[in-house]
Image 1 (cartoon, protein in one colour):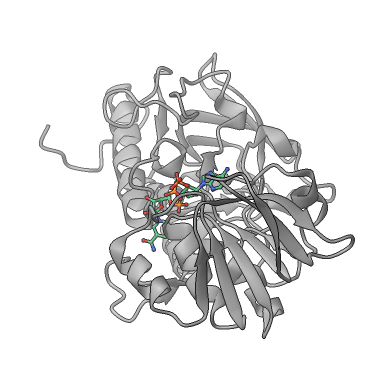
Image 2: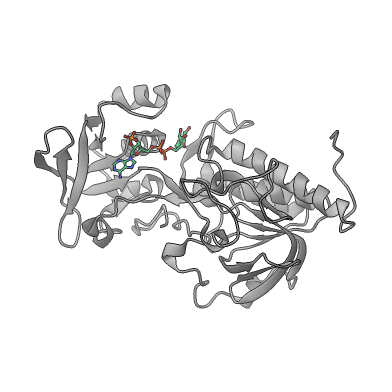
Length: 354
Ligand code: NAP
């Protein structure tokens, strides 16, 4: 599922790279010009264009590996639907997520990386060079770096699906604007929910946070900010069991997790912020996943397929930060470079002490 499927306008929703649920074919009309400047073979193909993918691209490009990035039809990853990023080093006044991604992309392209905004439909990792199909084009890669990220989880209610884009959203940055002076509900108790709620206070008259337990999971500073905001109200120990409304959201039905009692809470919008799922769709048949469905890594950034490396949220359900994803992308690119050099497929360019 896409994180920004509100459909009210705003930023383009995040398209999943290789999410089995959404169908993987590139949209009809994908321009042929989307092919990587005529190149379909590369020493490194990077799947994903969030901080992990683009940092891998910067490192691989600077090591003269001329990487191709198959970045997703809506490129940029989760930061494209994030507002202010205050914890990425080097930006003391903060930076908007989309601007940070634009800068990373420009930096990768400056060194010769080619970024193609197309989803990967299918891969074959049983042979080398590896094969990847994207937008009807077959690509060949000596090494692959999987940096396809993670996407928002939904409540899986029929009414939630029906009213998506009609008041139900998973992206306050995309859709918050449409709720000026309205009442909105945010589900979840982690940092995402707290961040969404705080963002929505810029527009909404009241933001009701609904959490299934009696304490938040999110960081203390975010909790303090939310709880001290006069526009934020919290309903503890409650689950959203239904979204009310025929053609637009008019309310949510809440169930008390202790007593089982239900009541309706009027609202104009429902923002779901209950976590993420890794985008492993096209790789699931080839690479190992852990109990939560995230890719398993071997020997730092490697996988069970020699020559395939992993970076970012697609394997990391612990840190999930832009800066850790970027660091991961760097590591995967250096590992890919060494792998190629050891096989005489590239000149060693990055010095290492190991
Ligand atoms: P998260 O930490 O996994 O929190 C998910 C929240 O949703 C939890 O409170 C969970 O409840 C609730 N939840 C899960 N499934 C639910 C369901 N079916 N119905 C109702 N509630 C449900 O996810 P996250 O908030 O997306 O954060 C993920 C990671 O990114 C964290 O490490 C976080 O610190 C980081 N992050 C950081 C920032 C920042 O630094 N600015 C911003 C966003 C995220 P329980 O608490 O009961 O499990």
